[in-house]
Length: 168
Image (cartoon, rainbow, N blue to C red; front, top):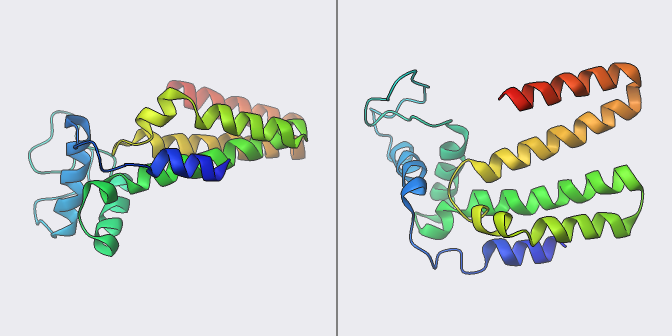
Protein backbone atom coordinates (compact mmCIF):
# COMPACT_ATOMS: atom_id res chain seq x y z
CA UNK A 1 0.00 0.00 0.00
CA UNK A 2 2.84 2.38 0.81
CA UNK A 3 4.40 1.64 -2.58
CA UNK A 4 1.11 2.46 -4.33
CA UNK A 5 0.81 5.62 -2.26
CA UNK A 6 4.38 6.60 -3.14
CA UNK A 7 3.74 5.98 -6.82
CA UNK A 8 0.52 8.03 -6.86
CA UNK A 9 2.10 10.83 -4.81
CA UNK A 10 5.40 11.23 -6.63
CA UNK A 11 4.65 10.17 -10.23
CA UNK A 12 5.00 13.18 -12.56
CA UNK A 13 4.97 15.51 -9.58
CA UNK A 14 6.64 18.30 -11.52
CA UNK A 15 4.61 17.91 -14.72
CA UNK A 16 2.05 20.57 -13.74
CA UNK A 17 3.17 24.15 -13.12
CA UNK A 18 2.79 25.85 -9.74
CA UNK A 19 -0.75 27.08 -9.12
CA UNK A 20 -1.69 30.40 -7.51
CA UNK A 21 -2.43 28.88 -4.10
CA UNK A 22 0.90 27.06 -4.10
CA UNK A 23 2.84 30.13 -5.16
CA UNK A 24 2.50 31.77 -1.75
CA UNK A 25 4.04 28.81 0.09
CA UNK A 26 6.83 28.39 -2.46
CA UNK A 27 7.63 32.13 -2.41
CA UNK A 28 7.79 32.03 1.39
CA UNK A 29 10.17 29.07 1.29
CA UNK A 30 12.40 30.76 -1.28
CA UNK A 31 12.42 33.91 0.87
CA UNK A 32 13.55 31.90 3.90
CA UNK A 33 16.15 30.08 1.78
CA UNK A 34 17.69 33.33 0.56
CA UNK A 35 17.64 34.80 4.09
CA UNK A 36 15.37 37.64 3.05
CA UNK A 37 15.56 40.14 5.93
CA UNK A 38 11.89 41.05 5.51
CA UNK A 39 10.62 37.47 5.92
CA UNK A 40 9.30 37.24 9.47
CA UNK A 41 7.30 34.20 10.60
CA UNK A 42 4.32 35.74 12.36
CA UNK A 43 0.56 35.69 12.11
CA UNK A 44 -1.21 38.92 11.25
CA UNK A 45 -4.73 39.76 12.36
CA UNK A 46 -5.35 41.73 9.21
CA UNK A 47 -3.89 41.53 5.74
CA UNK A 48 -0.12 41.04 6.12
CA UNK A 49 2.42 43.48 4.83
CA UNK A 50 4.43 42.12 1.93
CA UNK A 51 6.78 40.20 2.15
CA UNK A 52 6.01 38.96 5.68
CA UNK A 53 4.96 35.32 5.91
CA UNK A 54 1.17 35.22 6.21
CA UNK A 55 0.83 31.45 6.51
CA UNK A 56 1.74 28.96 9.22
CA UNK A 57 5.47 28.74 8.87
CA UNK A 58 6.06 24.99 9.46
CA UNK A 59 5.43 24.08 5.82
CA UNK A 60 7.64 26.83 4.33
CA UNK A 61 10.37 25.91 6.83
CA UNK A 62 10.20 22.24 5.79
CA UNK A 63 10.15 23.22 2.12
CA UNK A 64 13.17 25.47 2.71
CA UNK A 65 15.10 22.51 4.15
CA UNK A 66 14.18 20.41 1.10
CA UNK A 67 15.30 23.26 -1.17
CA UNK A 68 18.67 23.39 0.63
CA UNK A 69 19.25 19.65 0.16
CA UNK A 70 17.83 19.06 -3.34
CA UNK A 71 17.70 22.51 -4.94
CA UNK A 72 14.78 24.64 -6.07
CA UNK A 73 12.36 22.95 -8.46
CA UNK A 74 8.67 22.19 -8.78
CA UNK A 75 9.30 18.62 -7.60
CA UNK A 76 11.08 19.72 -4.44
CA UNK A 77 8.42 22.38 -3.76
CA UNK A 78 5.83 19.60 -3.56
CA UNK A 79 8.03 16.92 -1.96
CA UNK A 80 7.03 17.59 1.67
CA UNK A 81 3.32 17.35 0.88
CA UNK A 82 3.64 14.17 -1.18
CA UNK A 83 5.75 12.53 1.50
CA UNK A 84 3.12 13.56 4.06
CA UNK A 85 0.48 11.69 2.04
CA UNK A 86 2.61 8.53 2.10
CA UNK A 87 3.07 8.83 5.88
CA UNK A 88 -0.65 9.50 6.33
CA UNK A 89 -1.42 6.29 4.46
CA UNK A 90 0.70 4.40 6.97
CA UNK A 91 -1.02 6.12 9.91
CA UNK A 92 -4.47 5.36 8.46
CA UNK A 93 -3.50 1.71 8.08
CA UNK A 94 -2.20 1.60 11.67
CA UNK A 95 -5.43 3.15 12.93
CA UNK A 96 -7.57 0.67 10.98
CA UNK A 97 -5.50 -2.23 12.27
CA UNK A 98 -5.71 -1.02 15.86
CA UNK A 99 -9.50 -0.67 15.53
CA UNK A 100 -10.21 -4.02 13.88
CA UNK A 101 -7.11 -6.18 14.46
CA UNK A 102 -7.48 -7.40 10.88
CA UNK A 103 -4.80 -6.92 8.23
CA UNK A 104 -7.42 -6.97 5.47
CA UNK A 105 -9.20 -3.98 7.00
CA UNK A 106 -5.93 -2.07 7.31
CA UNK A 107 -4.99 -2.76 3.69
CA UNK A 108 -8.49 -1.89 2.44
CA UNK A 109 -8.56 1.37 4.37
CA UNK A 110 -5.10 2.25 3.06
CA UNK A 111 -6.27 1.47 -0.49
CA UNK A 112 -9.43 3.58 -0.15
CA UNK A 113 -7.45 6.47 1.33
CA UNK A 114 -4.66 6.31 -1.24
CA UNK A 115 -6.93 6.10 -4.28
CA UNK A 116 -9.34 8.82 -3.13
CA UNK A 117 -9.45 11.49 -5.85
CA UNK A 118 -9.20 14.31 -3.31
CA UNK A 119 -6.10 12.78 -1.73
CA UNK A 120 -4.49 12.28 -5.13
CA UNK A 121 -5.32 15.82 -6.26
CA UNK A 122 -4.64 17.88 -3.15
CA UNK A 123 -1.85 15.67 -1.82
CA UNK A 124 0.28 16.77 -4.76
CA UNK A 125 -0.03 20.52 -4.12
CA UNK A 126 2.48 22.65 -2.21
CA UNK A 127 -0.04 23.84 0.38
CA UNK A 128 -0.66 23.22 4.08
CA UNK A 129 -3.46 20.64 3.74
CA UNK A 130 -1.47 17.38 3.28
CA UNK A 131 0.78 18.16 6.25
CA UNK A 132 -2.24 19.09 8.35
CA UNK A 133 -3.91 15.83 7.31
CA UNK A 134 -0.87 13.91 8.60
CA UNK A 135 -0.94 15.77 11.92
CA UNK A 136 -4.68 15.12 12.36
CA UNK A 137 -4.30 11.42 11.50
CA UNK A 138 -1.48 11.05 14.04
CA UNK A 139 -3.59 12.86 16.65
CA UNK A 140 -6.55 10.55 16.02
CA UNK A 141 -4.33 7.46 16.30
CA UNK A 142 -2.76 8.76 19.50
CA UNK A 143 -6.20 9.62 20.95
CA UNK A 144 -7.52 6.16 20.17
CA UNK A 145 -4.56 4.52 21.89
CA UNK A 146 -5.08 6.78 24.91
CA UNK A 147 -8.76 5.83 25.05
CA UNK A 148 -7.84 2.16 25.07
CA UNK A 149 -5.33 2.66 27.89
CA UNK A 150 -7.20 4.99 30.23
CA UNK A 151 -10.86 4.07 29.95
CA UNK A 152 -13.31 6.86 30.89
CA UNK A 153 -10.62 9.54 31.24
CA UNK A 154 -9.48 8.69 27.73
CA UNK A 155 -13.01 9.12 26.37
CA UNK A 156 -13.28 12.55 28.00
CA UNK A 157 -9.90 13.56 26.63
CA UNK A 158 -10.75 12.25 23.14
CA UNK A 159 -14.04 14.17 23.25
CA UNK A 160 -12.23 17.38 24.14
CA UNK A 161 -9.69 16.81 21.37
CA UNK A 162 -12.52 16.19 18.89
CA UNK A 163 -14.25 19.35 20.07
CA UNK A 164 -11.08 21.40 19.65
CA UNK A 165 -10.52 19.97 16.17
CA UNK A 166 -14.10 20.77 15.22
CA UNK A 167 -13.73 24.36 16.42
CA UNK A 168 -10.35 24.87 14.74
